[in-house]
Length: 169
Image 1 (tube, one colour):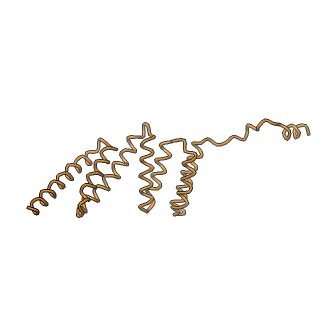
Image 2 (cartoon, rainbow, N blue to C red):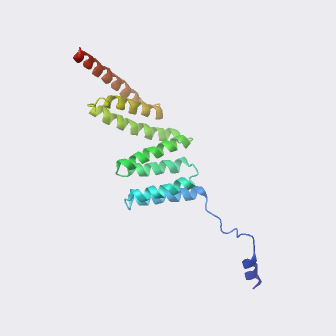
């Protein structure tokens, strides 16, 4: 009986009830987003859960990168844009992982540039391709493909300008 009264009347908090670490809660939300995207196929609810992730996020580059991977793998343009945005956040936060994340971003921007370069019908396609390849090189400075695509795109831009000048003349 004395133990019960001691427990009821005690003013100190019980140390056995600790709140979870922010890192654990962040990873919980990463797992929940994985479930919502890949099992439930519910992009909207995953964005709502992501808001909770942002509130507790202890700036773990791995968790942010994983969140980007999950969104990028989902089959929608909006989700892929969200994934790239998360990779950029992880790139800003990352320490040792920065190079690996930069390679992902570089590969993404090379794909974007390749699409513009392959199409190259509108006036802004070649400049957009050049911008994408330049961005790829900014994130992954050792990417030889991005550097060669920048040269090819500059050559194509110059050739287009020369043809246009010749046609006008």
